Length: 272
Image (cartoon, rainbow, N blue to C red; front, side):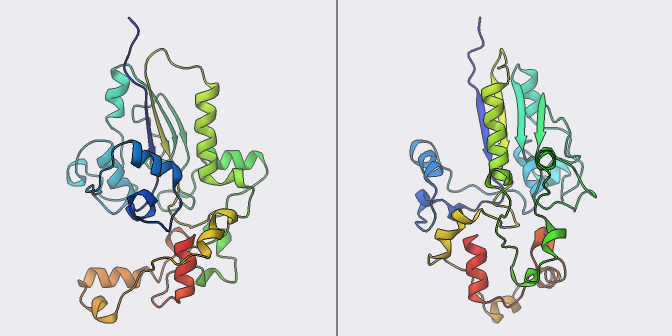
């Protein structure tokens, strides 16, 4: 008897907030495909991540357990197991294209095939990981835009992590992941049993580096910007205040923070 279980495609965007989807009540963004999913599917409007950092949150998503149970409390904590192993054991053919943020990056995790594309600017966990995106760029004689190159810009300190994508459009990380997933579906021999395909987009995780034609409309729009006052900052717990200061001393993910950014800087950052 042929296995009648459905194929499963799990698409994950990275650090995308709920207020970046038009169909959820935010008309200043253009998200026709996400809007279709909202209108034709199910939307969870009271869902929360278990941790503010990538790896602990993803480990919870792929195990069903809280960080204090998984032991994955920060990025670069070792993460080796997930429910993908159970899918594989039950007969699913499991493929990952794009970001998962396991550590080590290429841990099998139950996948039969992994085509890892990590963060656009990842130096935290290891000196350098040459992922599928790096290889694709290298084959074209290109190097991805990244912190070491952004730091050479005269305006690096005032960009707040917002930069134009200057390489060919199809080499952008999100284009690359989408094209690779499409290629896999169209050209790889399809498994006899059901398929589980996880597609992980690196965006909109910073650096904020859209291709110019996508950024242009937002630069012309009135966008909601973050606001705060000194009394609000003073009332925060000391660790929060210390972290705020710390973030001005480092440039994680190519963001050189400024405690008093101009409205123009914030608008560009939000638009990108």
